[in-house]
Image (cartoon, rainbow, N blue to C red; front, side, top):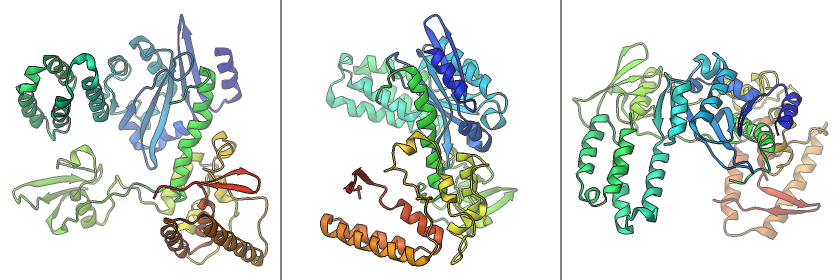
Length: 467
């Protein structure tokens, strides 16, 4: 196995693939150029890093432990660790290899993140603390609730169905406590609840958790490694490319409107905001880091007070990615590298320049698609490309083809229309009516039909998208 890994590493020198094997255990560290770029470009890589292992993914029961951080298009991978087991000794050795491979420039130049968010895996938490001792650790709320619910459903614990929901509600009240003081008060009430007195095993289980508060299989490990390098990495890069080209929508953020007259500047990027419900309550907002002293803002989430301060100062909330031509070019460079990304002028054609043809190569948009990636070559229905072998020299050719496209659309409507077709057509008409530049038109045409699978020559299968 390790000879095959060595050969693959030699054939792909741009990818860092370090491995060690001893006795019956092994560790393999994988860091692609995209991951290195993420460490340098994303400040989130030095703040909160998510670590969550998935075990038994191949014939050797290899465990995959990805390091992820938040990014403009969703999660962004920072490193991948493959291990033969999830015991503390093996994970400690693997994490040390990750640390060595990244060096001091890792995690946005910090050498270690400010904190890790993990599940309740004790060996993993101890191994992280041993490798990055100054990084704080927090339990993921989702994994805590998932673990408690599984415990309640386990018949060996003897918790009847009629009491499971009540016990789960108590657990939720604890994990969603807005402050340490509120948590302590709630835990006192939960601890004294009649149900916990009745089920002493659940009380013991919860006490242990409170003390800790401070899927297809691959054929083998080598193929699993190749999958992570060539498919997983390409998929994550394609997400950023889609955001840069407006093919993937960012999650919309809606907050309650808040009057700006309640805002006062108290220093550089610092503001005080008077509460509307309680005039005696004043919140402090730091727009430089995107934090507020209110319950929601303390978590780093965008609150109405931050938005009010941003409007007052005519600036942007730092957590919100403004998709202008500059930020799109930055996303493209992060995804495919500075040398492969289009220049900033290319993105002006998508957003700012109206009724003006872009004089640069018409194949630039294709350069945004990560070339020679198996995930793109093998899944054409998901990543449609333009045909760069032929470019119409005369606009009459385009006009003729558009008439053929209109006839094909009419034929498809007559043959396949159902009750949802009218809604879809109205949406399509609205989208095409908003087109103002050549690049916008080409982008719309490239995305159209991305859910159609060409199952054979001369025949298509049309998948209905969920409305």
